[in-house]
Image 1 (cartoon, one colour):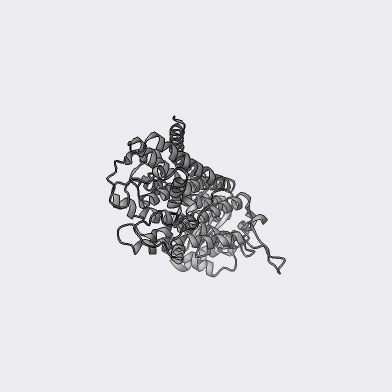
Image 2 (cartoon, rainbow, N blue to C red; image 1 turned 90 degrees about the horizontal axis):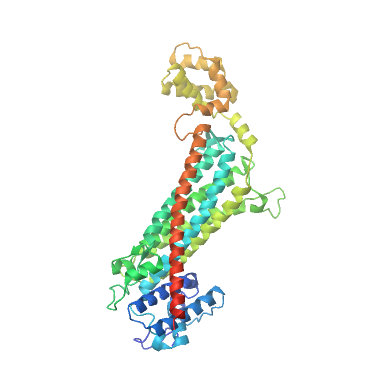
Length: 496
């Protein structure tokens, strides 16, 4: 009866090649525990609705618990004649307790709403796993930021030295982006955490089921009300992949920074040996291979988003087997993101910041040009466009950065541009030579002045705590409902 469990209306069994194409049995191991949980809850509800009697629910739950234990102990043996995990579990129950009772576990349910509930439960779990890892990564970034508020760093535009900054300011930029991704995860989680179970194939069921009860026992916030929406829509999967894709893009850019900054040409940072490889022939080489692969793995996550779009866009309203291939895209994206976060946790826990090299790069550059232009605007009421011209000509005529800070030369170019003589205070020159004073003058909110950087670290900590509390509420709700569900299962199994 194995491969024919659902095929009573067809005259022939599946062709072997067709079975190979259709089968997702091995891939379904990713959601097998969720499938059992969904089945347990569905059948508890059937019992409470007087559709199953005490003996029936007891035997069904015992059989399902035995399968769950085998899964947890890696003792499950798959039968390759099945198309997917759903008939495999149903047949396993039937083989254990007979079709008279086991044949009732699927009453008032379709594989269509069953698959959707499995995926929502699994996505919920994976989103929480990623959140937990991201909060740890944010803590590591915060530690880096706190320790580098005085580490001067050139800030780049077009990969050219633009303005003076500090490493802490740069790390805070990472933290802000990741916290936004955590916000997105919270929003996505709330939309995913809805119950499709009870929609049946697409048009509901005449069986007297209770969708509110399964919603409670599965820890969903509410049900997906419309039965077509519950089984046909896959926007929740696409939105998850979109959120993961945004994370991947952020991670890829961080990886690119690490690769560039760890080169001898920059030498701003050193990645620990544990996260680098060596050349097979060039003994001097230390290659940031892990970070390079983060770029590649990030691109896979982004490509999974586009793959999902191509699958979903071509299907009319209703359930189609095409949706089966979304599962692997989800799994691959979740696995890649978790892998990347773990590598970043290690790298940023052991990273060496080459402060002297960053400072020497600043001293060798004309990075204070804008600071000079703005001082001329503020101290001498020179229009910014003329001030910009004065400093541009000054830089062009300078062989080294010190030439730009020469009092007489500044006065000369003011005369050339404005056609008026002006005496520049030596204090301006001394201010520009003192990097701390330069940054102190950056009074705009969100600038890399020490005051703003320290203040923003505090804000980021508060934001992180706020997001973490929302995450804890999600976890607490799942833990609470899991306890309630397991107690209910034990009660029904032990009841005489």
